[in-house]
Length: 216
Picture (cartoon, helix red, strand yellow):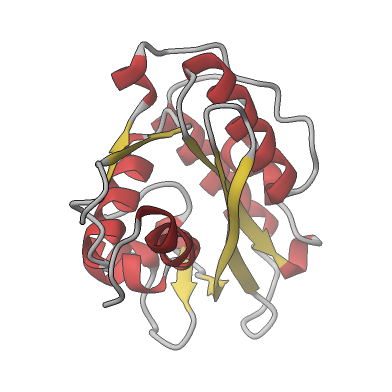
């Protein structure tokens, strides 16, 4: 017997994340078992918790616990970003605000990418390795951790932007083994190889047991 539909709040103000996560769960055959809600769907916006940790995992946990308390609902939080080897792992946990916190998301993205290109200007091909990393934490309404997963996508930094899709650093990130940037992939193609896609599929496997969904 099918259990009741589970609603999970995605702890993000980024609508792209809700769309990507929902699409991946649908691809995994869990669309009829789990429904994802944005913060605005449950009374947001809320005051954002301070992400004081210096690791993706701990920042994801901070957000999951904080928004569970604010919404009294099951919450999925992720923290993700770009790590560039030639920059000692930067921008890392500061990926979204690397060039400053002010302005719209699009303005911040533009400044971040400009800063990236300046920082990588003298780094030769072969030394431009990078990866997108995503940690996901799922907490119940009491803030107790149900599942934690990690996903990564290896690649390198392009010498110039390519493609018009995606967001953030996508146009500047050449996906390993594909010779295209994330911004040149369709949403379906990106979900198959992205850091968030990997982390979400691992989470879907764990949730499949929780909701009692049959194996595919």
